[in-house]
Image 1: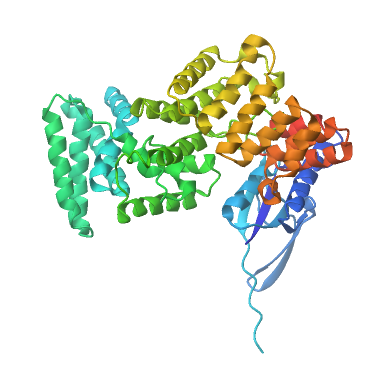
Image 2: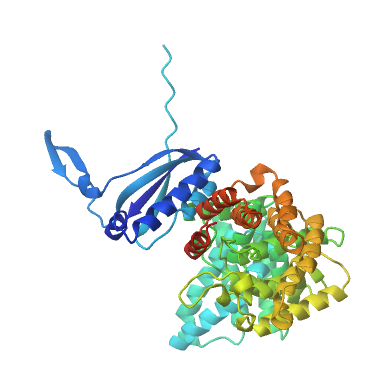
Length: 122
Length: 406
């Protein structure tokens, strides 16, 4: 089964990415987590995301297109990146979620990925 | 009014498990019993302020609960044979209301049911915590890192299995007892969390429910005083618990066992642990929990001798992995050999472990890094350390390993 580990971060956490006094700790921990995922053979993809203010949303309202600056969700914590892992069940997915370096202001959401659709038979 | 609330809560804390055990032992439907009991507690909150607190609160609750059970069974008509059993239980409860005898304690049977081999091993501990100690499912789910909805389903499924498979509420026969007691003890220990911390940098993973586990350990000794392994288990938990506060500095940094100040350990817990282990030894049947307790007892002895006798710890681990070759014991042995003999002997033992056992086992990587570093293989030591960090669940441990990266 594939699961997505979605990492939500507070503004302070996003700021730590480029803060000279905090960036080594920030990136180091993520790197070691990634190493553990890869060495254990469960890593199946993912990406870190740029800051929320680089986001652009596109939506349609009454048939009219609306393009706006900024992320979709108006919440304090924003999606900072995601890992896709391949593990036998939710229990092991949650174990991996618990291993993600925790910080105040960091929330991890685990969701099962949809099964890939069967290709249509000709 | 407030007094009544306090009394109800007190009765709930002290007698919940006994009430569940008594009723479930007669009707075998744990879910129905829990529902009926929670209704009985609600009734108590409503009527005791008017009527005063009954002389025998447990018997009062029992009478109300069994009435609810009979109503529910009549209503459902699913298990028609249960109504007469409830009636019998009702008469018994009534007799107890009148009699001077003490309310019977049948929690041991309930513990054996919860840890029955037919019950999924992952749900045994949660089931015990819920039915015997009245812990709520949401808290249990967080401690055991499980989706709360999934935990609820697993608990209900286990209770349905107990009912439908008619798992007996009884103390197992003598021939079966050691094996069955083993599963009970393991389930209690799983509630404690983990005590393997003789390797610096070992993430204790689940913090567990130490107080609840120790309570269950005491209960087991009270209910089965003649079993040495119950004493071994409680001794083990107490030796580990004695060091709980010294595992962290005032500022929250992790302090490995070897750097802890023994004078800060809890002397009363260590003394009790030692006494229990001696009592167990006099009973003359050795088991894995006594060996684990003995290992921790050797660590505790540093309080008196000022040094750690790794040679003895190594021998105890040899005995332990003969009896129970768990991954925790195997890694612990390799670490002890690394201390008592030399790093290469310890590493050779780690190299022998099957890859699928150690893939995500953090203490293995912490231990491996430690041994490789002693052998001067720094590149490999660093890689193992990074893997240990990546597998940590605890922030203080992660920070410790980073500070000591080879």
